[in-house]
Image (tube, rainbow, N blue to C red; front, top):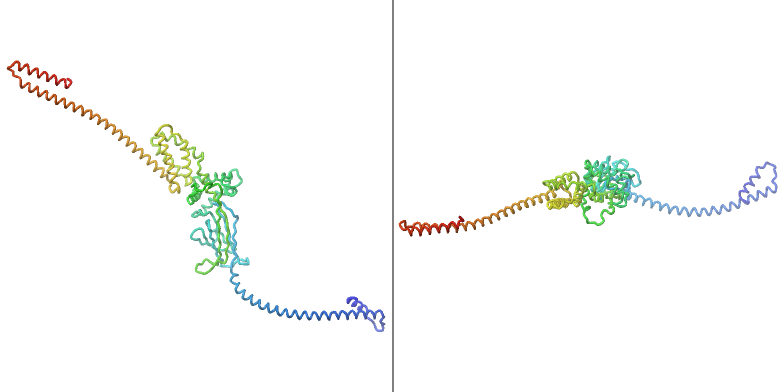
Length: 491
């Protein structure tokens, strides 16, 4: 029997009215139920005794735990005092739309500043110092900013949403305004003809600078560079090549055969304010790396390489100049006009194109024309040697070379005149010598004549008019002298 059955059996025995007899089976059931109750009570006694023992042990353990909790509370109070300053730190994260950009594109960088628990910060809002190891930083409109000494650093105050934003752009973009850079970015966003990608997308997707997609994009950039009204694009691309002149030097074999990507690391330091007189350290920091693909170097090499559309017109222009009175001056004037219409890279393209055209021009067998061509080529090459930085807007080296050539020609003509005069003088000297010889011969003849005349005079004085013999003899001698004089003078 279980205690539950016993309880049921006892419940069945009641209620009883007065005079009712207890049957044996009821009595037996009652006794059995009471026995079960007794057994249960005995078991409960043992359990209660065990529970008392366990409760006593538990009370002892609770007392020890209480002492430990008290000690922990004390330690937590001390730890809270130590941790309290750390709770004032910020959680800073940096993000941008993508990781890779083409030079000329603008990367918008966002810094998010919250408490350590991720909650928005209350006013006054903190500031973020941005520092770029490579690249230029520009403030985003709508934010309170303080520029650094250069565009490599910038301070921005966090707005109510906990955000601070800046624009990151290529390193050589310093000095260009936001509108000017937007014009360059717009050029990179132009669609490549007959393709479904933009210029920037072509540069980013091309495996190498010689990829067909990159070559197609080069044509778009070149066309924009040559536009008369594209001064900003021309200045922006020329600035790169002024700051990196090594692109045109044969210092690195294979340069232009692979892309060069510049990794820009931007650091962000959050601080409570921008007041330099308060001793506030950075309460949070973050960093991010983005890359800018250098397409300007490979495009520049492609742009200045002589092509038929540049070389062909000069092949037609140069030969007629050999027929003119001053071909060097006319060539210099035409070259100077083309030179002044373009930028640094355009001048390099012009120089290489004209030099390539010179190789195709045949001046003919005339030595003078060949000399003119040589002087033209020398002038172009001299100008090319002076184009390392392209600091002038006029081809001064070419003009100097031509001026030297013209001066040399003038001196040569002068020397030719002197030589002619010398030859004439030499002839005159020879004539004078001949005349002098003749005069000396004539002088000797004159002396002989004088002697003959003296003898005639002596014979005349010696005539005795009274003596026929004297008269005849002297007359004969006088006749002989006259005949001798006639023979000497050819009479």
